[in-house]
Each structure stands twice: as structure tokens, then as C-alpha cells.
Amino acid sequence: MINKTVKNAQEALQGVQDGMTLMLGGFGLCGIPENAIQELLRLGVKDLTCISNNAGVDDFGIGLLLQQRQVKKMISSYVGENAEFERQLLSGELEVELIPQGTLAERIRAGGAGIPAFFTPAGYGTEVGEGKESREFNGKMYLMEEWLKADFSFVKAWKGDTAGNLIYKGTARNFNPMMAAAGKITVAEVEELVPAGELDPNMIHTPGIYVQRIFQGEKYEKRIEQRTVRTA
Image (cartoon, rainbow, N blue to C red; front, side, top):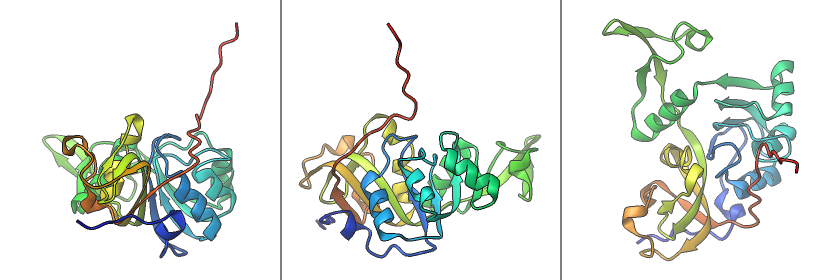
């Protein structure tokens, strides 16, 4: 069995270049590839197209890449927690494609499944549908949406093995699995890395066939976007 382990994020991100399209897994700040993002900051690559459900917050996650002007375009669904994102959008510094969340998920899944396009009713008759092909099925109008794929997909899992098999925990299972299948090169960072054969096959969410590089991450902060504390 192929051992896909690399030493660290620096080795895992070899080959990332300016102008690439990247997928970054997670939902909000849950299950995001924190170590990969820090390495992207260190590398200083720019003109990136980032596909992610969220844009992080101002001082964490993808928000750090936005602060350093490394992102040219964001393809996202929910971006309301990031003031710097808003500023760059309104000033015209950042190109943005906002997509209904279910459509975003399905476009990514389609990319991993090799399905170039599909039809969905979401967004028909709104700005989302401008310039897109539409078609009627059983008396209802649908928009054609194309797949999304990436040069690199960066995902974060709770546990993985040296063959690249991954198990996610809780909310981290939202976008990470489908992004893992949609990248030309998928890099997985995990909290716990175990030898191949130790994971229960029935519990694996992403088979190792989709993962090219895996490493054990470190110093995870696991921040919360909005923390509300009740006063006594």
C-alpha cells in the first residue's frame, strides 16, 4: 500500500504557484485546513482563486490570505463574518462569485464525480441566473450549473492513515469530503495520523484514492466565529 505521508505543510504544499485555483474545506471556522493556510501565507503565492463555503474572519482562516492580498477571486456561499472581504468587494479589489450553498456543494461534488454540468431550480429568475442556460423540466424552470474543480484541494480531518483514508468529525464533514474528490492534488492535514489498517473501513468518509499527500497538523486553534456569553 502506498504511503502518502509527508513531513509537514511545507512539503505538502510543494507545487503551489501563483494564479492557481484552490479549494479549502471546512464550514465556518470548523474543519478548516489551518496549517495549509499558514503555509500559503508563508509562501506568499498570489492571484489565487479560492473556493470555500466561507471566507474566514478578519484575523483567521482565509481572512488572513485576504489581508495579504493573495486572493484574486472568491467562489463562496456565506461571507458575512469578514469585514475585509466586504471592503475589498465594494472597492472592486476582489472578484467574487456568490453561489447558493446547496448549488456550491453540488458543483464541487460534480467536479469530483466527473459530471461537467447539472440543472437546479435554485437561483432561477434572480441575479444568480444571469447569463446561464435555463431549461424547463416538468413545467419548472432550472438553471444549468457547471462543475467546480481545483489545482489543489486542502482538507482537514480528525483522523487519517498513511494511505490517505480520512475520518471527519461533526461539522467538518460538510465540505471537506467533496472537496477531497475535486482536486487534481488533494492535501489532507489530520489531528491524528495512524498506520494503514488501523481505521475501521466502515467509518472512513474519504477513501485514500482521492488523497495524494497527508500530514499530521499542529497547533489547531479551532476558533468560534461568534461567541455569545450570558451574563449572570
